[in-house]
Length: 316
Length: 285
Image 1: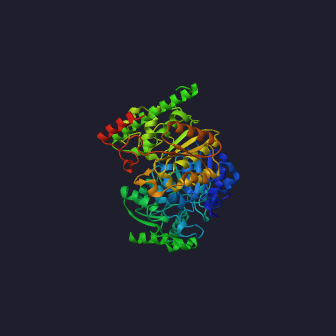
Image 2: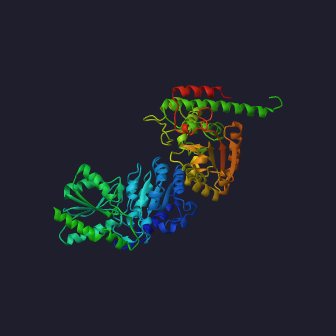
Image 3: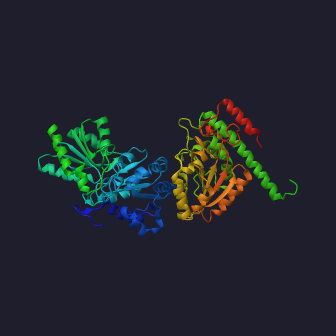
């Protein structure tokens, strides 16, 4: 997939393509699906490697534990279904069959957050980061764009142990190019400034970057950090943001409770207290509608980031 | 033994040896849970003949090489019955039986529920009911891809079969005619707070497995010879598709005051009860 910065590409499509490439490079990779491969885009892997694709039917619990069993033979199963099902319906199987025995199983939490094709609250996963983050032995990655999604697929596979990778359904702007070096546990400064720091993750990173550039035009120079790994989180970058800019705003395509904002709050409170504004979904269920309309209604869009930054500056 | 062929005599002798091992393991279970002051006694005593048949007669294993790729796998899906499992592994030589005294203690390799990262011989971590059969499916899928013909034996409780995931797994393995997968259900008829029948009955149980595409066999789970022969038949039949063995057992088997009593699901005997239990097991045939 030819991708240029600024192109609009769905991370799920980039994921599907990366899985095919991964399958070519690594014969130990197998895919488990629960009848959503056309949505999560593992259908491409199914076509390319039908013998390594396991259709488990609409039965996520069996799928997760079966993948764990298969990993004991040295295979690297990628379990792929909607984030709502992986992180809730089958969460006990993720916990006991995968995380506790530290199985080398990779989890694709597809349709992360709000964008679900207007499917509404039942399919909008606003709790998966919080659930996965507090699970022992689990690594949690929320790639910021389609290009990084592909890098994360390979990095997660190379990592030994359970990894949760969140992929996004709708097209989002490509912000990274071939110069980007993705490493698990590392954050990336995408914009420089000293008035405050905005930390974003997954598809909110491009929005936060847009906000940072807009603020720049208005004479407010902010630091913008992309935090693709929520666990283990880049504590040093958070502490430095507090000490060097004095104010932090987090923005995520997830509940304000327990996700990126929660993780950053934990680090700040313990090592470098400063005021924090957490932009994210309020503590309520979502609804159907256009993605951008939902983000705006619930206060998690570019204009909300800009407003939060201006308020923070006014407070100083 | 008059009139018996040499082969029959050997078979009868072997059955006696296995029964003796069962008595020994039951004593080990009582001592293990009594020493720890905790553990699931009832369901450990009901599974003994099944475990002894597998570990001392039927499974392709080598205790000196617990990670041997060609080995048959065993999953204790009813993970709370770990004392019976650990005592069997110790008696079979996976680790010294003195280690049983660590059971349930701090820093122990013998956790309340089996942990594959801590205990030699444990092929799968379990504890949350309903997950073992699915893990067994995955192990067989891995075996197929590696061209390894090992069998996977999964021991479930009857109460455990109230978990929906068991039937997700049964549906999948049955539909795919998965080979080399044997589910054994320790049907002791009693769960944590009452009988299975009054909690949520499973009958017609064999018909359920058959309806899901499995071959179902039934046996008296305490008749040593019958357990061995039924499991041997299951092993043979598993070459064609998944097999369920429904073993009718008694919770707390071998100790009169524990038998059939849900109160002994998750309780360990005190010193007095330990003495009585050991004496009863010693004196049994």
